[in-house]
Image (cartoon, rainbow, N blue to C red; front, side):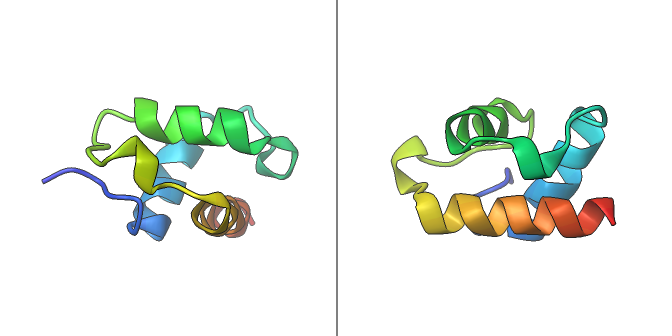
Length: 66
């Protein structure tokens, strides 16, 4: 079973592993959305993402980095 938009923490971990050179505080939401959808385990409707979901993913990624 793949990752869904609601799997915030798991997505943040996957992003941290996939993009170790990226500063998550500097990622814009367009790139973030594209990167999430490009994750191998991601399997959800692209239309289910929104600003609040992307903010939560970005915050979790920042926390994962700390």
